[in-house]
Amino acid sequence: MKQHPRHQLNDAFLTPIRLSLMAALGPRNEIDFATLKALLEVEDSALSKAISYLADACYVKVIKGTVGNRPRTWVTSTASGYRAYQQHLLALRAITEQG
Image 1 (cartoon, rainbow, N blue to C red):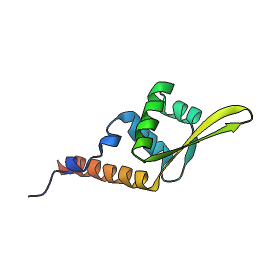
Image 2: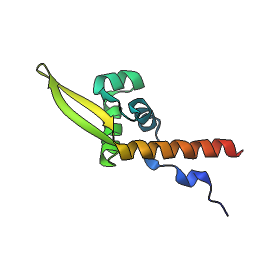
Image 3: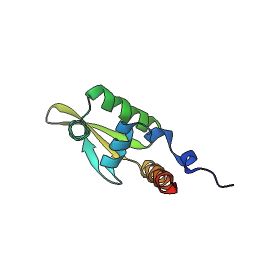
């Protein structure tokens, strides 16, 4: 018997913010924290938690630096993170096309 595609969903992308974050980053985008915050329409704390969760899973890379004398944070997806995100999307498509 074939396994239901929901078993292929990745828990890392089950929250709307983490899923939206990976969609925004795509395979190669490096986006600063303020831009991500505005793009995703979330508060600092929610975005920080999402980034930390995905960084702990090695799905995103966080780059800290400064612009002028102001601290800045940039986020980019890792190759393994983007592959996992793509697999998650395939599972979602399989679920929605099943019915």
